[in-house]
Length: 116
Image 1 (cartoon, rainbow, N blue to C red):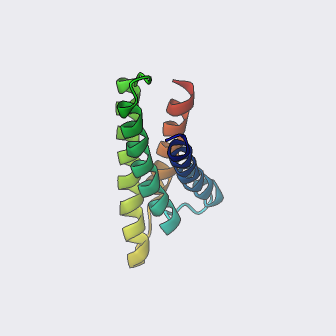
Image 2 (cartoon, helix red, strand yellow):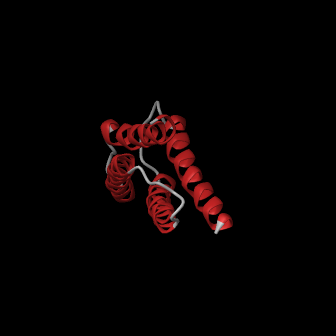
Image 3 (cartoon, rainbow, N blue to C red):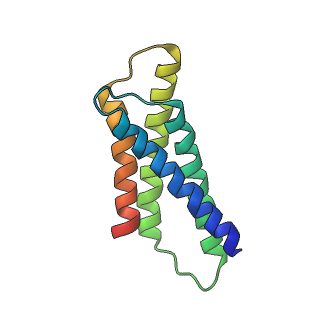
């Protein structure tokens, strides 16, 4: 179980790193990339699996308020990344707000995860 937990944490952090890193790399010409969309899926699924493991462990107390906030932020990242990814695939311009919303919301989720 420890290996699975560590692997899920790695996937979760890697997803956040890809979203935020790509956001910073494309900051002057903001867009949403396929990597950001894939990373948003990885972040959302790994987070839900981490929550499942925590709920199954009787020694762990889960802060449901924090998890609820992080879930809303993760869904926000996923939706923004999905919309931006579809626009990018069709060749439509991705708005700056959508691109910054994807990266900024992922950054806020990381801040909530570490500081709250």
